[in-house]
Image 1 (spheres, rainbow, N blue to C red):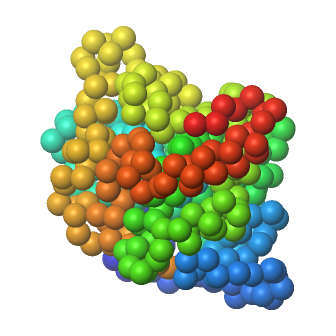
Image 2: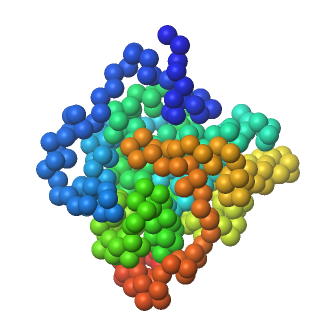
Image 3: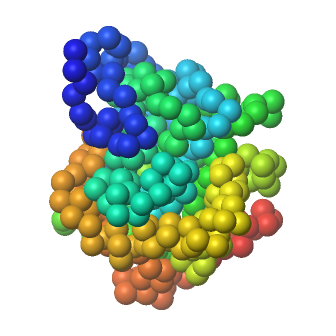
Length: 339
């Protein structure tokens, strides 16, 4: 039976279609629905959340997270890209994909990122497991690039265990003030009347999707200190200041360092240019269509400004001070400097 292209199979990795009747699909909620129903819940900005192992997860992700924790089988050369939502996920996906696959696509004019959104190139674990489509991961060639919004403490033991070899994690964080602004603009695409002040209060209280944000960030920060060979911790603001430097770090960490010949040929600069905000935002593929299995969002909603410091245009000084103080208090004694 001929394979039918889907958003999971349109990528150039290449993804392999398993929706041909040969692999069963069972949404995780069919198996763990009763577990999810018993968890504390609340509604935040129109999204139902469940409190699971200390974090407020979107209801439709919880059962998938349980399956992810219990059944994910990593490979030694896997790389998982992790982030809190609206903290640089799309950019990190593009940079990692372009870096990892550069040998396969040496001609910039033919690069898949010119015709595919970064989210179509790297599978999103949280939705794949929620939808019961983890068999797709088994069909991916190595090395696999995947991404998640789960905190480090909710990742499978098969990934985080002290005796686990390989399977690296790259995490990007961002100034929480800019995250709130970016998240607000993003959510307004499906809830136009969402007040900024309402979302801000949810963030400060920690009751926001995949929050509290400070616990999310600290989970990866502590993991990066304990296992720097396994967890790379990046800041969005640092990526903006010197993208080339951090692309080199990313390549080295993923086991794909740039050779002297590549350096001389401008390979790093080519990756930076290909994945620049201006370049990606201007592509037709990123101006139309949608991404996301449960809450499909317009692709252009993933490319708003791509800058640091936009919070000054949305927050009062009092709001900024309040959030800074909350984060500073949570980070105190951890060695992680607040933005």
